[in-house]
Structures are given as C-alpha cells and as structure tokens.
Amino acid sequence: MNTVPRIKPAAAQPAGAARIDPLEWETRVDLAACYRLVDLFGMCDLHLNHISARVPGQGEHFLINPFGMMYEEITASSLIKIDLKGNIIANSNPDYSINLPGYVIHSAIHAARPDVACVLHTHTNAGMAVSTLKCGLLPLTQTAMRWSRIGYHGFEGVVVDLDEQARLVENLGDSEMMILRNHGLLTVGKNVSDAFLNMFTLQRACEAQLLAQGNGAELIEIPQTVLDTVPEFSRMVTKGAGSALVWPALLRKMDRLDTSFRN
Image 1: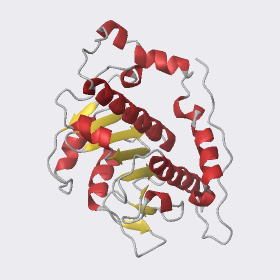
Image 2 (image 1 turned 180 degrees about the horizontal axis):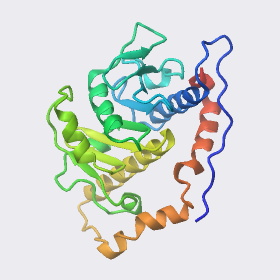
Image 3 (image 1 turned 45 degrees about the horizontal axis):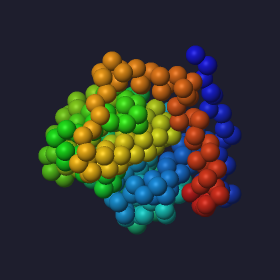
C-alpha cells in the first residue's frame, strides 16, 4: 500500500535562543502547535489537562506544559522537559512547574509504551458526559468506528497515586485511546499529530453520540461484520498516512492565526 511521506523542513529556532537539538525543537514546535489547536477547537479546560511528547533520542525524557499557563500561551521554548521519575531536566521559566496528575498519567504511559510518542488528555463536556455512561462510546457513526478497541479506566479519584499507574497502563493496553470513567478522554499516538487527530475524532464521536441519544429516537445498530471492516478500510482510504495528510495544513492554519507557538 502506498503511503504519503511526512516530509517537512526542520523548524527554525528563534535567533539568540539557547541551541536545542533540532529533533527536540521540531517536537517542541509540534507539541506547542497541538496545545494551540486543542484550544482553537474548544477542547481545553482553562490551564488544566496535559499533552506530553517524548523527546526523540533522549530515552526517558518527555515534554509537558507549564502548569498555570493557558494553552493559547504555550510556546515551543516554554514546554518543560522532565524524566520518568518527575525530575525537571529543562525549564525556561522557573515560575512554573508541572502538574502532579499530569506527571502520574503521562509518565506511566510513556514508560510502558515505547511505541507512543505523544499522550493527550482532555476534559471536554462531551468527553466527560460519555465517560459517565455505562455503555461508553457506541459505534453509532462512522467516526466512532475507526478504532478496533477503546480502553476504559475506572474512576479512582484525582490521579495522584502512583499505584494507579499500573491499572492505567493495563486498561489502555495497546489501544490508541481510552475513556477515563467519570473523568474524560485520553489518546496516544506515534507522534504528536496522530495523538491530536485521534482526540479530534474521538471528541467528534462523543458529540455525535450525545446528540443522537438526546432526541429519544431508536438508534440504528450496525452489524458486527460491518463494524469489523471500518478500521482497515479507514486506513486504506488515507493510504496509511494517518495524520500526515492533515498535520501540515493544521500547522499552516496556526501560522496564519499566530506564529508565536514557534517561539
């Protein structure tokens, strides 16, 4: 199957900035853009929630947001680099630190899933609403049928206990998304763009389900034999490129709106 290559020039670092490895800087720019996009599409919860990205070639290091910054404020250089034990490796603004639940959730997944480069967590209205439903996300729309499996993790209180990490990882398994019961949504990806597209799609699926359930009409059930074909056919339609088809366009959109995420 043909794939669309993800080719883009290395992101330029600001003049006079302390030199950062080009691969790390590119990841920082993508992650800062992701924060801005989550805000743009109405999926942020003020300064709460977190998106993290593994630093290429640096083993246990990953980037996460400064706790207290709005998503619209986050830039490539403001992201904080930490290790899996929560030690801060690099922080350009010591007035900010990291959020404990963000560390607990994200470090667990980065440690257990070497295939995951980005973890994205939201508290959207639709995501929180579906997280309270015993039925979870239903395969009512093509959008909701894209994945062969969605993980579910039961609510254990605010995620500050390291003992919960093992259960988070177990419940996510090898899936790309998980519904945190009575809490919100979580997606992962092999890069920042995949995690974002997974969240955007999961969010839309939750919104559509709530609209469908809200009118009280009888809902159509899709045969399992049809459901089983959707994930593979979806990959075929996109020629296996996934988010690589849309991410360059999203970066162009962010550049038209405000290029400061690149700073």
